[in-house]
Image (cartoon, rainbow, N blue to C red):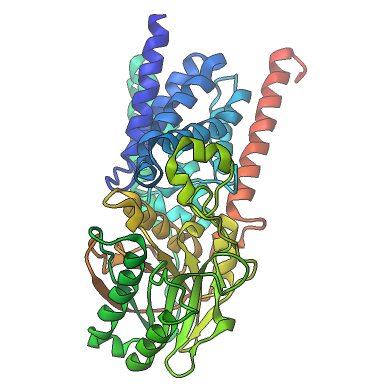
Amino acid sequence: MKNRSISVALSIVAGSALSFAFAPWYLWWIAPLGLALIFAVARREPVRAYQYVFLSTLTLEVIHLHWTSVYVGSAPWLVLALGEAIFFTLPFLLWRSGSRWGFLTSWIAGEWLIARAPYGGFGWSRIGYIGNGPTLNLAFWGGPTLIVIANVLLAFLLYQIFLAFSRGERLRGVSTSLLIALSLLLLPLVPMAKAENVAGITLSGVQGNVPRLGLDFNAQREAVLRNHVRLTLDSPSLAQSDLVVWPENASDVDPLTQPAKKLIEETAHRLGIPILLGGVSRSAGSGLRNISLWVDPTTGIENSSIYTKRHLAPFGEYLPLRGIAELMTPAAKRIEDMSPGAAEVRYRVSGATLAPVICFEVLDDPLLKEKSAGAGVLVIQTNSATFGTTPESLQQLAISRMRSIEHGRPILSISTSGVSAFITSDGRITHQTDIFAPAVITQEIFPELAQSPSDAIPGGSANTLTGGVVLAGLLVGTARRMRASGLGY
């Protein structure tokens, strides 16, 4: 019983530690340490391994996703964390050998699962999204899945060091330590996207900010729109840009109806350059829609330019299990189900092609691959105001940074209230803004045209690498069972 209590405590410690690998702390080195501790605890009792993994994962999810409680309350936050932990742990129900291959296979499969199920997945806590550290470059070659594989392998080496020194095998412990040090020195040298010899374009992002106090809901919608209009017209430097981008929900007042449409079109006309803005509309198709639309300074809003968000956020933009959710929290009644889009839309700016990514879509592996295949620049429009000063905005920026490296594409990430930034195709963050402060950021960026190695992997890097690891794990496990039974001779 005492040993069991220690294992439970260590599992919780490991999950808590893992949360500090993510933004806003960026302590990347905790990721392999936390994984090593989870592996060490789970390996002691292979039959109960899934229980310890569940405890670690639940602890991580509760801490890492705490920002969700700001909008929907504590009950949905805890249910979300519990659901994520359950789905992640499912592959570990099959891991009984205590082997490294089995642990790696189960962990990779768990991350793949939570990115896709239920309701399209919510893989916010994937280790591939820590957004910092020497393994980040690997995203260019295999996306977030390859980052996870590298961190698990580093965890195995750390575990080996512990075993070696605990057994008095100093030479083995020192040699493994040197191997880790060499790996950490070489990993940052892994090549990423090389700048293409192409003409640059100048983009500007307007972070208009939101009023937080003293306005009712409808008044706040109009105030947010007017904030973006005012800041745009008061920034003479924007005249040098090829395109001005407003964030998601810059116009929650339907931008396709009056008087918002007139205000937006007059702003683009006075500015003399196009605006790409995010809005919410009932006029863009059936139902309520989260859209991105192009405003030409001469012809105004072009209906053919409207992009409707394709991957909606469950429990945020539509509500599965509505009856149950409304019993759990009154906030659920405020959520009106949105209608998803079905088609991709891209925009041409000074010879470059841009693809819009609206907020939650940044989590969707296949969708980001599709967008990157047809565009040299990704524009991520997001609204983090709902979650206040929580780490959500920085965590999303870390995910966007990984995506820029994975697809070899420069990114403009623009938020209503921050954090906004430019990200180069090799993951360098520039012009990062403060949260809840009006800001205008401008930068010349260079569209990338070449396909990244990660995007060149057939079937998508996450699917193919996960499938390969699972297949290898099954083969290794089968071979070991055959040897143990004498059938291998």
